[in-house]
Structure formats: C-alpha cells, structure tokens
Length: 105
Image (cartoon, rainbow, N blue to C red; front, side, top):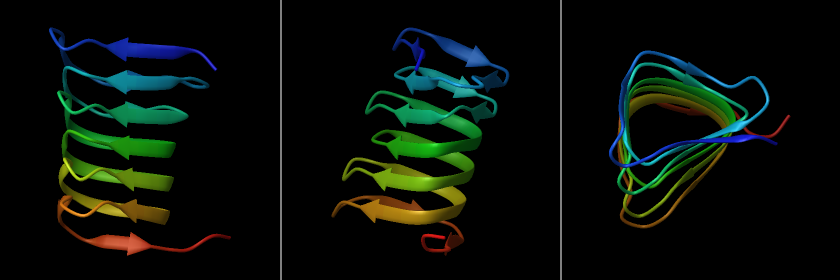
C-alpha cells in the first residue's frame, strides 16, 4: 500500500485523496482527507472531513470523521461528528461532538 506523508513544516489548503494508499499527517491540513488509512500524528492537525477504512489520531482534528476502525491516542483532541464501526480510545483522549459507533457488521 503506497503511503503519502505530510511533513511537519507543510501546510496544505485543499482536499487530499488517495484511492488505495495511506496518508500520514504530521503537518496541517485545511480540507478533506480521504484514503484507505489516515494517521494524524502528534504534531499534525486536520480541519475538515476525514474518511477512511482505518483512522488513528494522536494530534488534533476538527470537522467530521467516518471510518470502520477508529483509534484515538491519549494525546488526541477531536471536535467532530464521529461515525465508526469500532472505536478504541486511550485514557486522556479529548472528544467533543456526536459519536455514533455502529459495531462490526
């Protein structure tokens, strides 16, 4: 699976789409992100919608989030409406918004 990395010194204004790969965000993204897997690193932030099969958040996210498998680290700060099949949240994670966990199908 190909991987794209948004480094810490990079700020992107616009949407990001990867049809088969993963996106690793260490910098700032102002726009929607769609990929097979999205990781928002501790230094990363996304202001927009995120949609993927798997999403892991260590940094911050504001907007909406839709995935099958969501993992929120203790350092994550999420202000979003969340729709996921399953969610794992470490102690200390901050989540504000509507959360809809549908369960495995």
